[in-house]
Image (tube, rainbow, N blue to C red; front, top):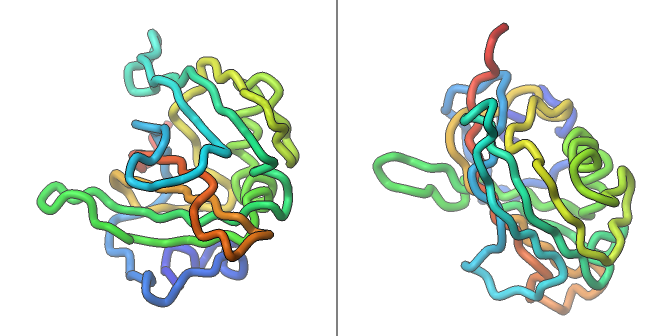
Length: 200
């Protein structure tokens, strides 16, 4: 199991394939996460059961904290409990060799479990900036307008420390009730910077 998870509460929750267990040597600790890019994954052929599109723009009060405006469309009950499983495929940016593929792969059994139990802090933030975004699953099959959502996210309660650096995440959503369907239902791409938490 990865060292960064050993002291957290995720030890018994994540199923990490043996092939992707890597020892993290990057400096790590308390952090802030800043989203630099978010949208669809052009690298994958997927259905469009979940689409997130929009733009990041500068905040007048802080150029470091961008704001996101756009929309997210949910279709075919993709975020109903038990309907979808997710795999998050991480890559880490290296200034010499570019993206280090398969830095970490984290499969989750249920997307709603991820939203309700692991990233509840993020769900609470989204409920303040996304019209109609529920604090509990399911997310209805509608288009959600996203207005001035901060790109900077504070430390999440289930992740007491994280390695620092720039990371790319492909969040792939698969049918949970149709395992014979191998084409992903959707894919969301994120590029984030994980930096040390400012001391005040």
